[in-house]
Image 1 (cartoon, rainbow, N blue to C red):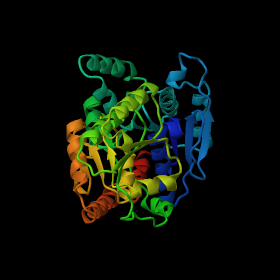
Image 2 (image 1 turned 60 degrees about the horizontal axis):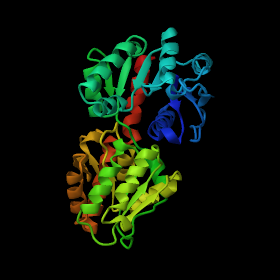
Image 3 (image 1 turned 30 degrees about the horizontal axis):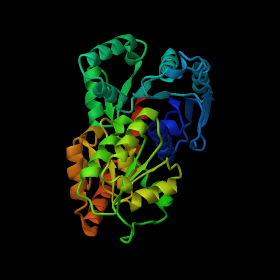
Image 4 (image 1 turned 90 degrees about the vertical axis):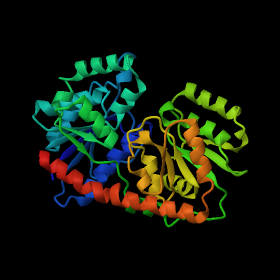
Length: 384
């Protein structure tokens, strides 16, 4: 197994999806690696999430320059990457993300030493493409690809796709490139240890749960509106759990709640960072709603299903096979979501449990680290 450097911008809670995917990826490779390969991590800014033991880390400060700070430029980052490559005898550099300076710097330093690069965009490319519609989207896409073609994309050896939707987008953008699909995954053993055997009691009042960042692409506004008009039993609550990233969007959500016919049944909590508390909250929910307008591959769907809690999510999450288990796929609009919420409230305890078990089996068969880990080991080894 080669020594691998993971390079990204933020390794912290504000970058939740990528942060926890990177941590999981290092952990699953460490568990399967019997040759004791070295793993390293380069990031910028504060680190408030644990790093897997044995991982060599370098964290540099983001510049105070107002023009360069949004790009997460760090004058010391390239040097830090260079140092990790030399000190850890790195054979593969795995870059996470697309838009920020740390990704560009990591690719440049890797290729300067003829080290192969894997780039995982984590679904950002199709999120960007879906957000900016033609004709302006086409112009932005053309300009971005033109500017970054040689300094970034042509230097990538493998583009990694986290979903089939992501894979198709990469093939369209880079038709001559090598693209490998390995989905995000969940460590079921670790999750079961966190849950400590906790199971949902039938005596718990039903509630619908949203867990995630409060940003427009997550579709929280759609959920609030659909909950207000869906046919749900009296007393059913909608719990919104997650950090606010846009004050304007948060104000918009508050305005929707204030005029909702069920505003008294909507509870907006802050983020839950304690893993055991989060697992209990997910396990006790009647179902988890993830109405994303665009998504790489929402981890909360995997987490909920691993907890045997079915989810209602959208076709735009990249989970093409979700209905093979106990999950429900809908279009990201109020009408479709309203119908899905209404239908889910008709489930009895038996159907809800059956859907939960089917969801767990889907994770075990296709989205567990025991499935993805060996594929990562093989992919890294093929480049070293």
